[in-house]
Image 1 (cartoon, one colour):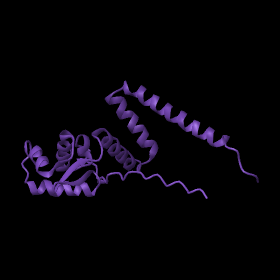
Image 2 (cartoon, one colour; image 1 turned 90 degrees about the horizontal axis):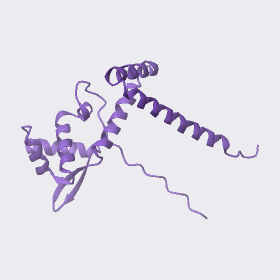
Image 3 (tube, one colour; image 1 turned 90 degrees about the vertical axis):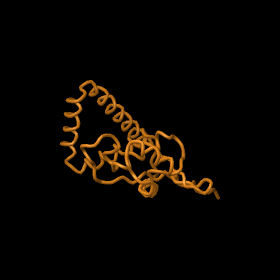
Image 4 (tube, one colour; image 1 turned 30 degrees about the vertical axis):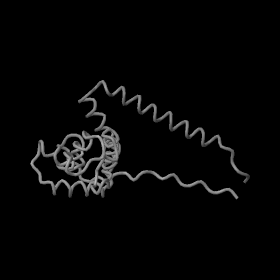
Length: 167
């Protein structure tokens, strides 16, 4: 008897707040101010580091107590944004995603929230804003949409080519 394949375990995605701060830049749109400073420090440090080192990095530009940084680090680990490991009796923290991966995840989170509005209005607004800010990027948007349509059509074609069971 052949064993059934094990289900593929997808990594747990970080839990982001549902509130988006439209006036903020970058990851600060979905993270708090101190969380953003901590993520910047962790990404800049580039490896698992103790809280004391994260605090030292954040404290270069922002007055904050070590205990506050530790509290936020632990909360970010609970949300799945950071990985927490014990090394030599110290907790070390590192990003679970690269900055680029996190931006992709956060962007998707924001877009999924925006789709609570009427989809055609969202699409029209998206294209209009993009045209105002960077008209040259409209061509790259068209190429991306065409690529997704081709991928969808290939998937649909493959699904219709499968032999069907006896009826």
